[in-house]
View 1 (cartoon, rainbow, N blue to C red):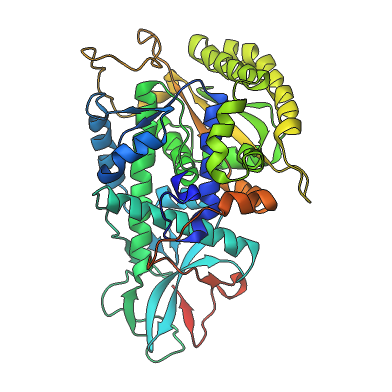
View 2 (view 1 turned 90 degrees about the horizontal axis):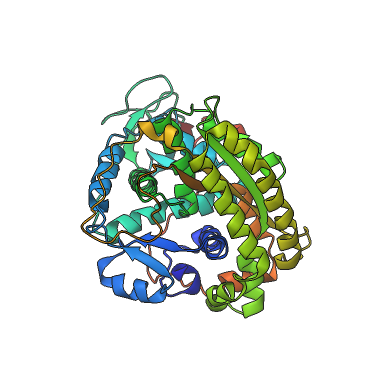
Length: 459
């Protein structure tokens, strides 16, 4: 939110549209939830300013609520990731699945600089294409994670194992096989690769931390869009949903109609609902006239009957999953889901904005992870009953699961691009940090990916 309004500078305007999607997350949380909480783990020197900027959020002290213990667990889990780039692509499942969920294609090639080959990070797409623009935006957002880690005093490793397409390790003195320039001498990697790996590691750390915290606090999660994508991979791996689970989420909810209820795995331990909503922040921006007035405008409309009804329906779905066996819950909530979908049609008509492409919508997917599914999660600390627990933590005698919000960032970026005047309003306040060093995206045309030339070679 603060990067969109210009209260906090951005290192690159390439992350602007992803930040706008994150703003939409916050607006949807205001409209569709009774209470919003956040972990008080922001940059220390800006901590009080941040709390003052969001008086409607309950900030939880990590020391008081045993969240520091969860943070240590998340750091240990993220440290277990062993990044590997083989033949130009990430081979380790953590980063490979994340890139698949982001629906982009990132590769590395050997590029000539000063007569020496350096391993370079690229987007597999034609220069200037919509796919390349999306890659640039997603890459900028991932690199921003490294800035977040640095400013909060955290260091993450950018170490990565490099293996060529023939299975040979790439070490000092390595020469590019089949090179068209000189003898194929290499000078290692460009700095972007190690920075990118370090950023992905921090992204993983934060996604794991907030996933475990959500389970501990019995709360739903709205994360930064790229973190949401990794969260789905982490949950699927930890809870044993199967490696096809994240892909299933993307493919199904990118094509099916909103209002669906889908069983994620055969054991029935997780289900998802999908509802289509307009991009509320766009409508609110036009109503308020500038991006700074969006949150105030959101609070003015959140008590309208349609939003009060939507919140009640979401509570009913959540309570059914927590209180009944999955089969009973499915039967009970199917009608509620259909009612919610019908209500969303009215909401889209009232709060949608008309563009040349119609009314842009965003699909809000709730993945309900039942308590039975969470046995694979790391052991979490006990509640500290000596302090007053947050009011939103429900009956602790009845263990419950939690819901993770998923959104298809690729589709949402396309929707933001289509907003026209509203997009101009939403992006008008963004201020780029002076002298900021930002990643300059490079492209690799798919048809030349495996080709040698006087300027590059495949990894």
